[in-house]
Length: 354
Ligand code: ADP
Ligand code: MG
Image 1 (cartoon, rainbow, N blue to C red):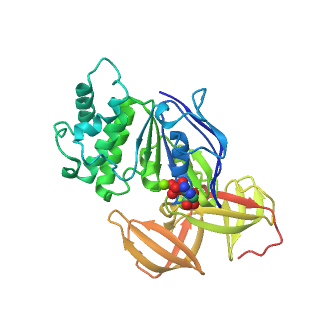
Image 2 (image 1 turned 30 degrees about the horizontal axis):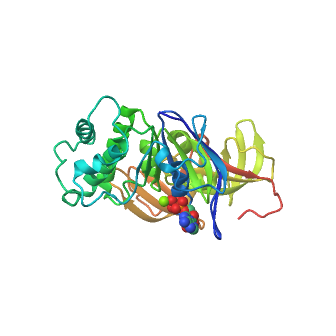
Image 3 (image 1 turned 120 degrees about the vertical axis):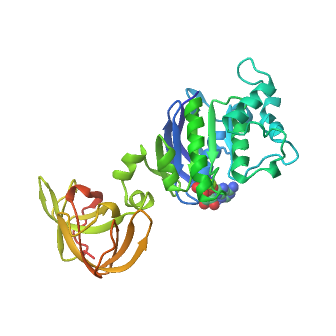
């Protein structure tokens, strides 16, 4: 298997900068996910790793091998795209065996043995003689995965492989993909715009925005400690508050939002600085918490396992999750200081607090 290094990748098309500056490192055997909204540069990054795009500047290395100028078919990479892209005139087995025309299967196996092994791996044993149009969307994507893996590549690249499938199937398939990846120990770069999927399957995620990586880390770390407002709002739901530092103490900083004062940890800065902090809906509480305010209930959604309550706090939208529906349209809401997370501190004391 292989480590992947991207160093300061930049990609410009005529009039469009697809990648501003992308550096990352994927470990041997790691499941690494690029996640971000449409147009942020995920596919371009993946295509640069595969060799389909030549970066305007910057480098791609596999281990200590410099890959710039190496054509895609010499990169030892298996790829799965969003649209199934199976060969329609070939059977399932012929599709899976396609890459074996150019390369012998790993180990001392025949092509037939390798195809059977891969179909078994993706839970499609016995489907070899079918035509692609006899399969469901999820089955086709498993064939595409088997085809990508058949020659035994050292790196697997997946570009939104589930986005054409319905939600239930997506969840099942992502678990299967993760299991297969772990069993094989193959280094994998996965692309998705679906933040929940990214958090669920990855060893590490890189959150992309406008051709840059905003933050890289383990899913839990990035979810709990976003480095920026963008990451805080993109991964899961969040309440983001703009505040002003009123006092700096060892237990944390006292900050002002509207006419309320809250204590938040790790704000840094000095009195008068602007601070942006966030509080997850699941850590906001009705009638509880150290930092409190009153808000108006706008709408309540039943989610099955909880209620999502949309509040208006003097013109600020606030969302919380609650086990029970509030019984009044005016509620007291609170959060503990340790559940507030500061994403930005800026020292331009002249601006007015909103
Ligand atoms: P994502 O996969 O995250 O949706 P892409 O990597 O496909 O994003 O695209 C990043 C940006 O680069 C977008 O603004 C897109 O329109 C632009 N782009 C991608 N490919 C091309 C191309 N061949 N020519 C011009 N612009 C492109
Ligand atoms: Mg894309």
